[in-house]
Image 1 (cartoon, rainbow, N blue to C red):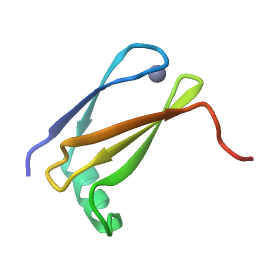
Image 2 (image 1 turned 180 degrees about the horizontal axis):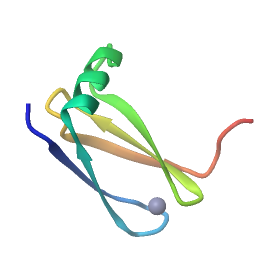
Image 3 (image 1 turned 90 degrees about the vertical axis):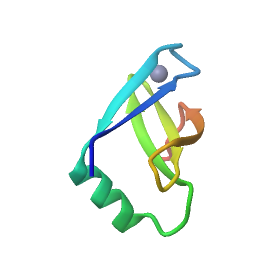
Length: 70
Ligand SMILES: [Zn+2]
């Protein structure tokens, strides 16, 4: 496997976020994902991005939220 780059735009802060998904991450993600595309929650500043990834780690949709139920 090779490291894959994930890039997406955050609706709230208007920034482009780039993450390196290394082998260890890809392996762990595949172990946990039991449907596709599978969501990944990325805490970002004061909000959260929910990025849906397919089996090739290609972005298949992004949601953002400021809410977490505590
Ligand atoms: Zn953001």
